[in-house]
Amino acid sequence: MKIDLSSNYMGLPLKNPLIASSCPMTGDIQMLRSLEAAGASCVVLPSIFEEQIGQEEQEIDQLFEFGSECFYEALDYFPDLDEYNTGVDSYLKLIRQAKKELSIPVIASLNGSSLGGWLRFAQAIEEAGSDALELNIHFVASDPQTTASDVEERYLELVRTLRKEISIPIAVKVGPYFSAFANMAGQLVKAGADGIVLFNRFPQPDIDLSSLQVNPQLQLSTSSENRLPLRWIALLDGKIKASIAATTGIHTWQDLTKMLLAGADAAMIASAFISRGPEVFTTLLTQLHKWLEENGYRSVEQMKGSMSQRNCPDPAKFERANYMKAITHYSPRM
Ligand SMILES: Cc1cc2nc3c(=O)[nH]c(=O)nc-3n(C[C@H](O)[C@H](O)[C@H](O)COP(=O)(O)O)c2cc1C
Image (cartoon, rainbow, N blue to C red; front, side, top):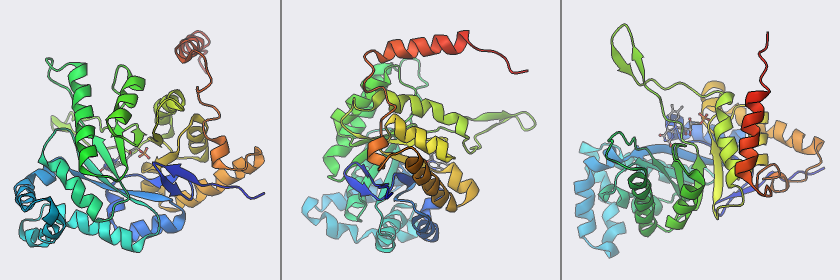
């Protein structure tokens, strides 16, 4: 039986739902070629950080002073910034090169947390040919005076501002630390997001006891971490007018299949291909195909969301009941 693995992410047709997630390895053209050859249906480039752009903001401001009609010509001046290049120019080059060499969609990634001129760099990203933009918002609300609604408004204002800058689809990649994530996801969509990527995996710093230094070293994920995005994808499926991409802890065909059953339009993979190489895409796709065939599905579209809470009349009660069941039925394995 012919199985259709295609999916759609924010209006971008994908030949399958497996996307290479943003990480330093997706900044290498040879690696991007290998990922495409192994079956990745789309790639997200490494993030360029607000701070990197901030360093060149003054130059960007000057370029904008030429007037918006001259903006695209003005971009040609970027190579002249080479001698004090902090990444802006090479990032645009990476997008152009990736677009030239690959036939799958290429998504650039902006990483930041505050409103500012850096957001205008999104226009340059669009002009360089990126098919969409992923905005990774990383903000730790450490000030006790900052309220939850201050933080939410900060996120929303970032998305609204970005929406005004560009016309390509915007995906917003966020962490799970919101008290009412379903509402927040809807607000992000209202603010202009075409896709929500859940959840961002923040490195959790440790303390090195021998050097008494804070150690921010990032560890690769494991499958056990995918339960959190899995639950929220199942809860959000059908409730927001945007695509949903799953990220964190997708290593095996079981992890991937569950995310799709929960309602994900796409599954983003980083740790698995960093540790096992791009071939992991081929393996996962072969196994997904086999599972669909064995379970009588004709397409990914058909399976998507079939285990979500879309038709559950009271998801909060369902969640509470499951929580109680898990706790009261626990038995230690000897
Ligand atoms: C070494 C490394 C670097 C990463 N860099 C970025 C980044 O620049 N921008 C971003 O949005 N996510 C970044 N991520 C997060 C991944 O895109 C992904 O969301 C996260 O690792 C969870 O997926 P995984 O379990 O497949 O690794 C990075 C992850 C790793 C492991």
